[in-house]
Image 1: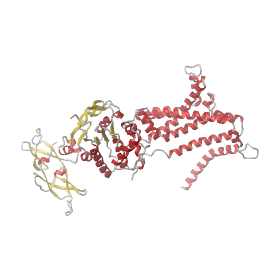
Image 2 (image 1 turned 90 degrees about the vertical axis):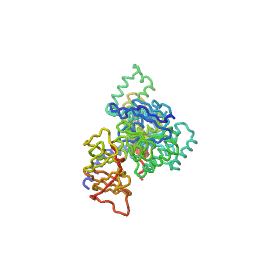
Image 3 (image 1 turned 180 degrees about the vertical axis):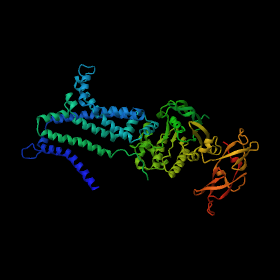
Image 4 (image 1 turned 120 degrees about the horizontal axis):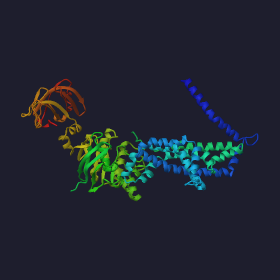
Length: 263
Length: 352
């Protein structure tokens, strides 16, 4: 038993070291901007750069729109497939996995070919059009995570019976989704939202090829021109992403409880 | 007077499988009706078609003279209670009960008053701020009942509302449901597979089997005069005795070497033909009794002590029948393998 635990801890320690050592090294490096002294100068430099705020703000806005569009597309789709067309579920599972299989590069080249300025839908000819295209791409990229989060949320409540109960009480479809289904899967939706946010905030390929001022291309640009700031930015993005993941855990505790007391 | 609930030629098929076969019934306002039958007999499907969550393949449903067959569930003004409670987990008790009222656009003040009234009715005053997960199954089901009747529906539909509860609460809640139904005078359709539940609270019972109505009648009619063998075996306990007709004209039957004269035989009965006779356990008495004109002797093969009642299994030969006798605290209960004489009235021996 003890020997087993020793090996388990050793494997865990090695795995953790593989992950943590580079992170610690990056953090220490980010503190070495001032010669022979540890300081937060690199962080100060990052936070004094107006492009940091501009690109982060842009990605934040695109992320928020992506989440709203994703929820509007995924929640009704999952709801109706679970309720009315359960035979479509395997197809839904497959389709929502495609963004994990198709590289972002292929996706964005496809978009550029389909929606360039000489096509019928010339999205790329205007800034707004390109932003819409970028949002569409991010909705697609986040689909596997948003779909699974929402699907898991709906699995925990009996949406069929709740829908019937609400219908018989006089509610229409919109009232049922808005007042019963959405509030009951809110925590699941927020989990999907934070995952989406984590993807959008660091995404480089699509934003760069569509030439949009997002946070991902800014991070890469900094990496090619500066020494210490990219390390500081890497730590900042880690904190943001982990913050988002931590929020999922915190929110999990507020999930609606459906079982009756047994006393 | 026109019936309040009228179901005409109601049929439901799922693919090639017809689960409800041209069912007809009509009930008066204020009646408590039970749809009783085993799993898969079509009783829940009928209830769901009345509620509007299932579309009939053919036929019509009328409530208070209005044909509601084509209406959506939210246009039918009905209340329904589900087996799994189906309370909205995100809403507290008050908001659950007030949900239908809010949808109907009732002002908050009136809504609160109605919710309070409902909470008093179900015996849970002061529970409005609790969430469903903080309540027991019985309490949740009472809230579900309050939610169903709060908007003053035209009819109340109950889909096996007691099945998920433990035995004691099941009995007390069914009495409460009946008391509330009588107080409000609301026409109620109750689906159950539990014959005791149906017999105890219904004005009339529809016994169903494989999509058809086997019998429709008051509880005592269903129990005392079962129309078919299915009804006789499904509702209550029934003994079946296999015998041989000795003389069809004299109505004599041989039961394991003992000759009895029965009240009636079917017109098709012929001498020396096998025949099945049925009787309820409670029509049998231990020893002779006034009014009992048939006496049989046998051996006690099993004794089950049920508290106030003792159930005996008596072997007459190859036929084994059950009978119930009251527990007498002053004498020891009968023992296994003891000889026993039992009697019954010939009119209680049914040929189905």
